[in-house]
Image 1 (spheres, helix red, strand yellow):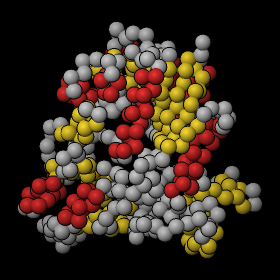
Image 2 (spheres, one colour):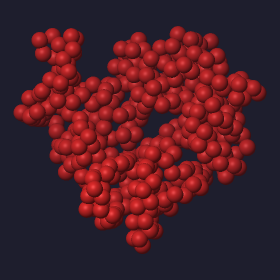
Image 3 (spheres, one colour):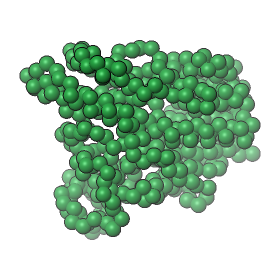
Image 4 (cartoon, helix red, strand yellow):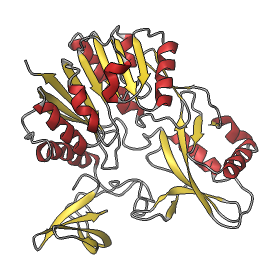
Length: 410
């Protein structure tokens, strides 16, 4: 299994990446891209399954592109994800497996764990609603009435939305809406670049349904309470990024806080800090925090969270990671640097960040390949890899989070 969800095989010396296949499975495929050194193919027919497969809990799994691995036992999913991480570190970063302590941490929940999903919303010409995801390797809609990885409260809302009726239209209209559960059990709804006429029709339809109106929050620009954890209140706004697996995210928060306690951290920088997910608990410990995030609305949420929790030690500013010293000229010597970049990794920021000369670094990544690329630069820049942990925030899919601890060489 290759990172990205394709199974890998070889024929006549050439590597084939086969989408939607599993290791040990015999399939008839159609080659879609035939390059000199590799080819990409799709499954036409499943001839014989591997001996480890289990029935998919979701009846839409065979067609839906949302989950890749519902036929795979969870322990095997974790094994593959551990392999993705270790392979990337060795192949791209030049870090041999076995040269560092490694742990693969599973998710507390493997189904109904997502508290935020983005759903394709399709209006038929007669005004009826279809909800779903794109089919595998296409833009065809797979209509669903329940998502087996979504929070049950979101599924309740989806069921109610399917009963809505809109004005008739000349052609089918399709867009995407995001649903996110907040602390009081209600659901935030948002979307990007939505046509005004659709958004107004949607609001009218919801406002005309008394039960749905009680559980949906639409067009509210204010902060709402996302969750309470360990005495801290985390707020968000519609459309703002938050981790989707609440129990797994709480595990990561607790792990970072314990690490800071063990190493007596007094000052820390949190780059790509979002709304303060990992650093607010450290500020609660009395650690002075300097957080930077390029997306200004997230910084507004981080500042609001710090104020609401009375955390005067937390300082947040909007800007690029590499400009941390310009944003905070008073930056002290650092005990800890936390980085949690987007999928593309640190890119232009990795070398400037090394000049912060932090004693220790926690690097949280959602892509093992860009992580390995950045680690190679950081290890050459005077740091040693102390430990690696895989975190499964996304059961039933190939996605995986990785946490690396680095220490400055003496």
